[in-house]
Length: 390
Ligand SMILES: Cc1cc2nc3c(=O)[nH]c(=O)nc-3n(C[C@H](O)[C@H](O)[C@H](O)COP(=O)(O)OP(=O)(O)OC[C@H]3O[C@@H](n4cnc5c(N)ncnc54)[C@H](O)[C@@H]3O)c2cc1C
Image 1: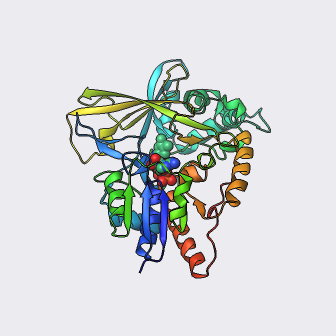
Image 2 (image 1 turned 180 degrees about the vertical axis):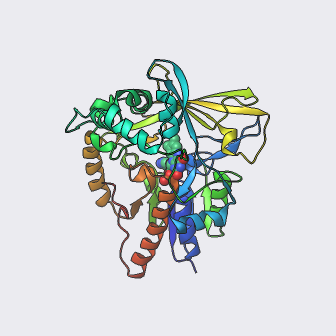
Image 3 (image 1 turned 90 degrees about the horizontal axis):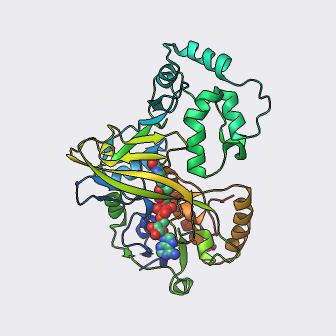
């Protein structure tokens, strides 16, 4: 006998992982998604022209320190070794364009300043000769970066990229964004620090398809959620935009969106998966070449995307929540509305208006499903949020 009927709005990682866990606990799960595919923003598909596995909503690299989450994803996909190594094209202190290694590390410093420093020498050089020590109490991101690394590194590697990505001057962003010295004094250019890192061999959509492959789960694509649907279910898990659930009644939460300009190339276009562009004058933030995200495959042709960031308009895909003072005030109002709504739990990156990496999304989805089961056991209604958005 079914434990009850539940509706998941969104067939991304949040909806899939919660749905699977609760299907295994005996619930009948219906998952609706407005799009014509599963996988949410992690969606991958093979490019018709080149055969390359492309990440349709921007490249996704799986990395985590959470062993349970790593074991979880490995049940549904074979993970191939992948290390994210990012390069950037920018101007050196003499105004010459060059290609440098990111995050800023000893290789970057030596190449950028034309030096051959060892780690402790480089540390002393940055702290004593580059950092702007006249800034005593940094209030802004710009001040903080200048105080840590000085003008040359700041302008080449932080300033232009931040302006393009967020559409604001670094002097308008809080210093708290940069908590530590953003430089490595060794040659480690692995972008992520996490213990586990990899790529699913057949892409994320194939992995999520396996998560959804359970007799208790039904998926309906190209189906936009309507609040009237809730009447047919015991509870709704909503991974769409929080403000969208309330028809944007209080106004819109601000997001950045991305425009992707696709182009193909015969051969190897840039020799790496991710090339950032630090100069403000170059209108895109980066170019990604997707065959390099699957180094175990071999393709003659190549497909690349130039990535442009801008403020999201109502019809755009919301990518990065802005979460500055103004948005947080509006978010607080929506959280109140959500907490006064019965029968719905808001989950995932859009439902809680936070940037969430995939591993955090899965961790929260598992915790949400377990929390729901505990509430159900004791006859309590599930809350609007298992993870507070504020
Ligand atoms: C550009 C970019 C790059 C990223 N790169 C990485 C990375 O390298 N590594 C990493 O770990 N994480 C990365 N992430 C984060 C990753 O995308 C998220 O962790 C993940 O997508 C969150 O899953 P979700 O299910 O919460 O949301 P989503 O994937 O957004 O899924 C929500 C789903 O709900 C559907 N939906 C919304 N509203 C409705 C409605 N009203 N009716 C029906 N369906 C609806 C949407 O169509 C969507 O399919 C990146 C994110 C972005 C934006």
